[in-house]
Image (cartoon, rainbow over all chains, first blue to last red; front, side, top):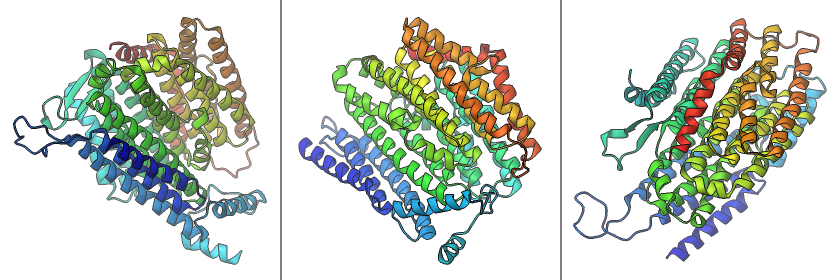
Length: 143
Length: 460
């Protein structure tokens, strides 16, 4: 059982790590989700015991399953899902601005912007009013 | 008020504040000032707790009225309250700076309050898994704060920051689960006692995971690559919070889990820790000298300064741990001052920046001198000429980059392009500089804090 579990965790962690190294930002998010779930499995396997359900009143004499790992895994699942939502919203924000989720496209667009800044088209980068995503799209179209 | 009453209050006040601020529009001045008052109240609680702990020893309580050993423990000892006080203080100063300049996002005050809530909880908890939860809360607030102005490069920086640090968090989570598996408890005190009875060979891999996780947070040499991108994109108060408050997690985590819970494993890894620290000091300083942009120089400087903390932890013993704590505290204040000052212009801000730069270098009477002196004492105590020379070399290199920035920002003719910022914000930066000078002129409180914190680590 321990061997199977550790193999499963290793495979999930490995595929997550592989996805993080991709250029597609969406795949990076999926990779993070996979890695978090590998950690959740690890928590469960850290307290793997066989026994009665740990519900009060406890049965006399019989071994009781470890409830703590379940509570920890539940908390970790909540945290990882909320962070995944935050990451997805960041990706969406970049997608709206650049019409692409490829990190190279995003970097290239940024390099263009930086060049424009250096040419002095827009010296007041700091003081520039906040742009709505729609404005950015418009500018991309006219370029 | 007694410590027993202040401990839950310090954790609770920023929580309630954050939850209620999340519903309000932070751009309104009233809401922004309410957040300042709330964080100020939280800071007052933490300060009160600090005095209570220094006078009467550690304060402990079990949350929810559960019997001891079942419920989650909140434990305030000198090490925890020191880091909590500094972090919340830096957050308060940065928040006031931003509010004086005008908050531009509705979520800013709430996010800052969440960060303060997460950090106080993290420094005051006695439970390893609870530590992870608070850690995630403050990190999540940090990811959102990095993208504060919603510029594209900031959003991209936030994405990189989030992905790398999530990896670090997962590694830490795995280490906590593994520690639970080996020791059968999550309470750090009990964990330390039981880990002392286990063969180090079975825990050493866990200790490595902990070191990697916190090195990622602290931005130490081989784990630093995400750090410059994040700081360059950030707004000055956000950078001050990230560098002055959030980075404390790394130093505190290494001290707590390294020196407190796994001291024998730390001793085994002394050579590795010292090498990593040395590499960070030299690499950070050299990169900082070669950079042009202020934020980038300060980011690399942060890598170098983190190296000193690691070197002190590597040396070990009461003197070195005290030096690590003092260095971490002074470094937070320096970084907060430098990032806030770099965002403004004018004579007062320029003078404040110079004070911060002197403090980074370690010139008296700035507080940095006290920290460097503590480091020298630790290295002399260790009897290592190489380490003493390294600390001197690091200081000399930091002199170069600190005054390169000063020259670049404040010695250029005023072209009126950059506005100086509102007067109250400039006065706030000046006050921070005065605080650093005062801490250097009267170092007694700082040294007492450092020794008390080191006493916690040696007490086991």
